[in-house]
Image (cartoon, rainbow, N blue to C red; front, side, top):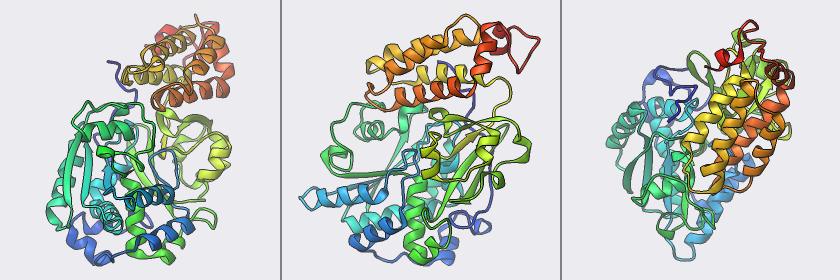
Amino acid sequence: MSASPVPVPTELHVLPGPALLSGLDGGPGLRAHRRQYGEPPRVDVAALLAALARLRVRGRGGAAFPFEVKLRTAADRSRQGRRPVVVVNLSEGEPASAKDSALALTRPHLVLDGAVATAYALGARELHVVVPQERPLVGTAIRAALAERRDRLRTHLHTAQGRFVAGQARAVLELMAGRPNLPVTAWSPEAVAGHRGRPTLLSNAETWAQVGRLVLAGEERYAALGSADEPGTTLLTLSAATSTVVEVELGSPWRDVLPEAWAGRSLLVGGFHGAWVPWATLVAGRVSVDAMRAAETPLGAGVVVAPRGCPVAFTARVVDYLAAQSARRCGPCLNGLPALARAVQEVVDGAGHPERVEGLAALVTGRGACAHPDGTARLVRSMLATFPDEVTRHATGRCTAVPSARLAEVAS
């Protein structure tokens, strides 16, 4: 199976931040956490829904879906007699991402307080926590945190496979059910019918940490950071030779966030399902879910990759990896993504045609059992749109990154 061009980080740098990552000096233990925040209050689901809506708290797993909508859906279904389930998804299948890992290692009780408070508000009795197989320190940290707590919930720990699609919501539900940890076609959201057909509130670690801080610190303190349109903060993974997790206020200028050493590079924003953005374009904007979505460069899971070398060759390596990581359960994943990977590699080698790449990207979009083909196609289209001159150079057997080399050498 093709290796990821960005390996899962073995060394992680976590910088102090204004909210979720404040007070890191106290350590990750429950006693230090309670000294900082106190005991979590019991919250009413209606009050929590209202606060989430006013603050526009959105999921931090990639889609930026309003968390209030998911919670309201689960609450409505639970009133129809189906006991809800709460899931903390720490699987973090995106190799370049490290923010959920950072929270597990430094702020596990902020994550768990958010999930537990919401579970109590919903009347849930089960909490499921999913940790990644390929990041063993995360599992160790979460087990230690759970051992410190006395939550009145049945808590279950699951280990996700080291696979890109293993963290997808339906893949997580399959894992919880004892089946292969792969996505399946679903006809309703998990908040409607998830684990064992029950309403399931499933979110990643940062989302639960945001909810935890709202519950513990209060709405006023939460809204004191960020912008009027987008209150709060977000975590970013800055990935180059090393991985660094930072917390920034929403609305912050990108120029103040990105390392100066990256100046002039083209950056992959949103991770492997993201989009290429030239340095000058990104630093002219702000860290904003709304603005970046409008510009068709979504923030996604908050990953910014700054690879060295040829961005076209790097894209080919990513697409080859993503094709190998699919569940192979639908046509776009079984046949479409491998064909797309070959077509992109042919462009790198100077033997392919961008029109064929564009056609294959269109063919797989909107037809998969999950969003994996769509995200891969987004990356490919972004490459074609951002680097047309570089693609043309590759057609002549040359590459700007290594002008004196043939392209087969650049891609190897």
